[in-house]
Image (cartoon, rainbow, N blue to C red):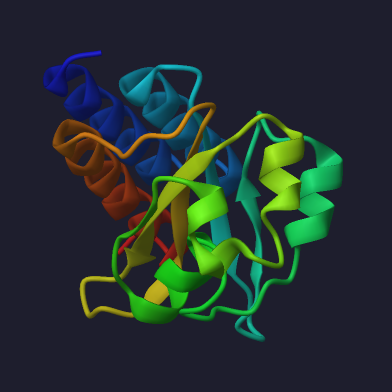
Length: 168
């Protein structure tokens, strides 16, 4: 997928938003786009902060129910995983190797059981900087995202923020 394909997908998602399409459909569209852009058997996921400040599944069409149940209700913390850390810090978090990252000590068995070895996550934030959730991606081998991956997901995360923030 080329950068103009990302732009086209962003435009499609914004049109969906303006037409009142359900948020979960928009988020799923964004996740599918991220997986196409990143490729390499990557799996993306959007987690959303609930009213109590806990991370809940927003769109994770290629992660199994058992995994989603196990991570449901994670509290943002700079010391836990990639998505919880990104939600807590409001910054990009990269884990190139679950075995080598202490933030995954309590949870690494979960993605490893699915054949994932690394992950990264960007916060989904309003224009004012309020974190609404995270846009994470898992890899089936040890690797880091390319700059083009980061740029694409940042664009997709902006649309996710608009959808989660009532279209603003």
